[in-house]
Image 1 (tube, rainbow, N blue to C red):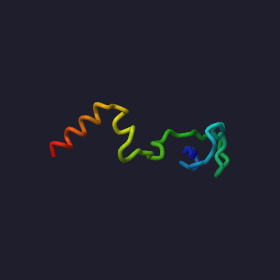
Image 2 (image 1 turned 30 degrees about the vertical axis):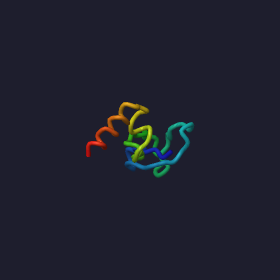
Image 3 (image 1 turned 135 degrees about the vertical axis):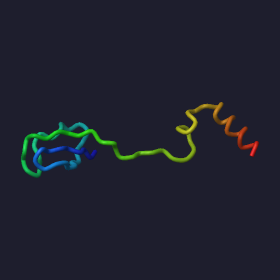
Image 4 (image 1 turned 90 degrees about the vertical axis):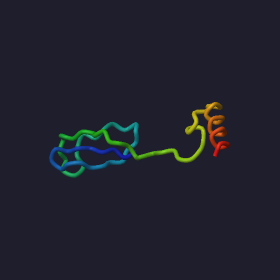
Length: 72
């Protein structure tokens, strides 16, 4: 995963590491120790198109879709 860190001296930087790894404690750019892992919006993962996530396995929502499609 790619994590975003904030350093008081350098600003923000990204670092790739495993989820199992501990957060960095030393900035790789300036070797400063006043850094923290930042919470970001993620990678923008989206499910598109039809499928189980669109209707939540609901037979009712499929029936509603069929009913509205037949009216058109």
